[in-house]
Every structure is written in C-alpha cells, then in structure tokens.
Image 1 (cartoon, rainbow, N blue to C red):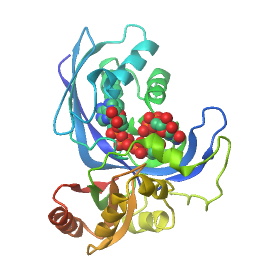
Image 2 (image 1 turned 90 degrees about the vertical axis):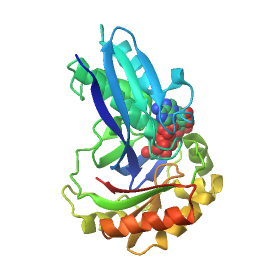
Image 3 (image 1 turned 90 degrees about the horizontal axis):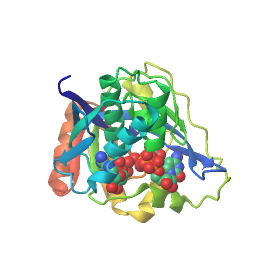
Length: 291
Ligand SMILES: C[C@@](CO)(OP(=O)(O)O)[C@H](O)COP(=O)(O)OP(=O)(O)OC[C@H]1O[C@@H](n2ccc(N)nc2=O)[C@H](O)[C@@H]1O
Ligand SMILES: Nc1ncnc2c1ncn2[C@@H]1O[C@H](COP(=O)(O)OP(=O)(O)O)[C@@H](O)[C@H]1O
C-alpha cells in the first residue's frame, strides 16, 4: 500500500466544566463541548515492517524526545492489542504549539490510530482502537474522529457528532508552555471531592452559530482561573481578543495557555488576527473556523 496521510487538527474546548475529582484514579470528571479548528499538524504513514517516526516543522523541538512522542505511544498501544498489526514509518509535520491546551499531541496520536486503522482495515470504533486511544491520553478518544461533540468522564465518554455550524474564530497562544497536570492540581480538589457549579447546558445537534453562542456563553472553562495563576499572560491574550471589533466571546481552551475568540464573521476574525499579530508579533495567532 502507498503513502497514507491525515491531518491532526487543534482541539478547542468551547466549554469545560469540572464536576469533581474521581475516587480511584484521581482524574477530574469533566463535561466539555469540544470542537476542532482548521489549523492542524499533518501525519503520513509509509507502510513497512518496522515502526518508525520522523518529526519536522516549527514545533518539532518542543514536542520532545522521539521515543516519547504520542504518535509512537499510540502505535505501540494498538500493536499490543492487535496480533500482527501492520505498521510503518510515520512522518509528522509539527506546527501546532506544544503544551498549549489544544491537544496537539493527542490529535497526533489519534491521527496515528486513524492511519493504522486504515492500513489494517479496522473500524475506528474497534475495541482495540478505542482502548489504545484511552491508554494514550485522556484527550485522544475525542480526537479520533475530530468533529464537534460532548466529552465526559475523564475524556473516555464521547457523545455523537453535533454537526454545529462552523464558528469564525481566532486562536491565540501567548508563547508560554503550560503543562496540564499542574493546572488541574491548582484547582486544589481532594480525591473524591465534587464541585457544584451550574450544570452544563445541553447541546442540540445542528445548531447555527447564534445558537451555539447562546449555549456556550453562559457556560465556562473551570481551568481558566487556575491556569491564570500558572501563566498570568493568558489574561492579556483574553483582554486583547475582547478589545477587537466583532468579538462575541473569548475563553481559554483546555488547560491553556491558548485562548480562542468567536467573531461575528470571517472578515472580523481576519482583521482581529491582523491586529493581534501587530500588537504581539511573538505570539501564535491563527484565524480559523471551529466545527
Ligand atoms: C485539559 C484537557 C481538556 O480537553 O486538555 P489539554 O489542556 O491537555 O489540551 C484534557 O482533559 C487533558 O487531556 P490530556 O492532555 O490527554 O491528559 P493526560 O495526558 O491523560 O493527563 C495529564 C494529567 O492531567 C490530569 N488530568 C487529565 C485529565 C483529566 N480528566 N483529569 C486530570 O486530572 C492528570 O493529572 C494527568 O496526569
Ligand atoms: N506529537 C506530539 N506533539 C506535542 N507534544 C507531544 C507530542 N508527543 C509527545 N508530546 C508531549 O506531550 C506534552 C503535551 O503536549 P500537547 O498535546 O501539545 O499539550 P496540550 O494538550 O496541552 O496542547 C508535551 O509536553 C510534549 O512533551
């Protein structure tokens, strides 16, 4: 079989409610409306006997050692679950910011599972594929088929595709890597402790942009306050986006530091991205659509 290719889009948590900290594994129980951006890493697989990986692109260095790369980890988990799995050499073009709350590594891992599933004629809902996704990281299952949906539990419960209207948006990363674990830790929850914030609104399928805004505006990202204590520059990025014409909502994604803003239309998003780039030339700024 010849070269297989897929894109690994940035994951955006339009909402992220923390319900509490589970007894047992101590992971946090979440309720999150997840969508995906157009901006993406790219992953290729050249089928062959041995598992290999080459990483290149602007954020290849920050992604860390090759052997720890989530692409290889996901492939090894799947190989452990499927006898005689056909493998090959991956080539990852890494351009998403790393440790950024947009699940770049998780999306790369999910992309690796998609390519291996294709090569081995496995369905994406094959139990071994699901198990490998879960074993690789909490965010990997929702990235397997990257389309807007609800994510619950620690990330293992995935709702149906919601077919939301694409939202014109701008993503901004202020250049500070933020690891996920310290942000959850800064919430300060004891194992078994539950939080009683307002319930997550229910999200119907097929909503237009106004209706999506109506649903997410009163919801929240409960990791925003703890992330601000770890990286106060997140507050500057939010303020800059909120000051742009046509900005309807600005919020942090995941555990940060990337923030997103939803705009009234694509032209407003493009012009806001230009203004943010001019004000902060060192920041990562991407006009995009979320769906
Ligand atoms: C916060 C979220 C929201 O989508 O995204 P990111 O900010 O990472 O993009 C995810 O829950 C992150 O998923 P992921 O980055 O795959 O997490 P993992 O590698 O499995 O876990 C990293 C660490 O985060 C904590 N963790 C993660 C998920 C969760 N539901 N509860 C947790 O407490 C644990 O301390 C764990 O050791
Ligand atoms: N393919 C990959 N891309 C990015 N980071 C990776 C990858 N493989 C392993 N990692 C490691 O995973 C950690 C989390 O990365 P990432 O998925 O970018 O975080 P986040 O979900 O917060 O955006 C990084 O610190 C990095 O060392």
